Image (cartoon, rainbow, N blue to C red; front, side, top):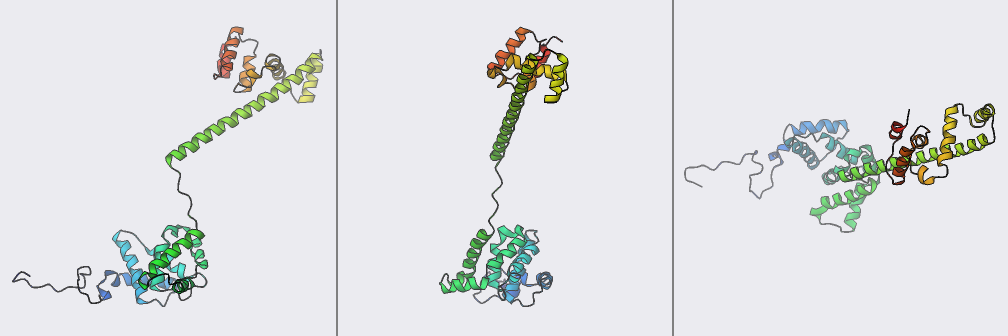
Length: 297
C-alpha cells in the first residue's frame, strides 16, 4: 500500500470485490436487499406460499434482479417455476432451493406451453426422482442440482416434444414451387376431363344427328336426353368431335375445351388452323384468344 493512503474498508455494496475466505453475509448481495424481497412477496402471496427457506427466497429474488439488469421482467418465469412445483400432485414438500434451481433451469424452452408444462410435472414426482438419484449414487452432493436439472430436461423433452423448427427460406420456396406445380397439374387434369366429357357427348350427339334428319326432332332429343338447350353449344360439340374426335394427339395436348372448340371453328382459315395444330403437336402453348383473333369474324 502506498504510504499515506488508508485502506478502504470493504462496504456491503462491494459484493464482488471481497477476497476473504470467510462466509459472505447474504446481506451483501443486491438481490437480498430491497426492493427484491418486496417484489417477491406478492408472488408468494398470490400463490399462497407461506413456507419458503431463505436459500429459496434468495434464489427467486436473484432471478428478478438478474432480469432487471437486462431490462426484462422475470416475474412470469418465477411464477411458472413455483407453479410447476406446487400445483402438480405428489410434489408436496418439494419447494426447496435445489428443486427451484433445477426446475427454473429446465423449463426455459417449454414455458410457452403454459398449462401443459405444469401438467407435465404431474408425471415428475420431484422428491421421488431425487431419492432414486441418491439410491443410484448418481451424483456428488455438489452436483445434485445440475444432475436433477438434466433429468428434468430429458423428461420434459419426452413429455412435451418441441415443435419442428420453422422451415428455411429455401424450404418455403420449394414448397411454393411444389404447390404451384400441383395446382397446375390439377388444372390440367380437370381440363382434360372436361375435354373428354364434351368429346364423348359430341360423339353421342353426332350419332343421333346422323340418324335424325329432322332438326325439330333432333333438338327435342338433345334437350330431353342431354339437357342441352343451346343449339350453338350442341353444334359446337358435334363439330369438334367430327374434326378431332379421332385425334388424341391433338385433344390430349390442348389447355382447354375452348382451344379445341376455336380450333374447329368454320371461320378459321385452314392455313391458320394447320399452323396452330403444328404448334400444339410440337408442345407449344396455344391460347384460345390467339386462335379466335385469327378467325374471320
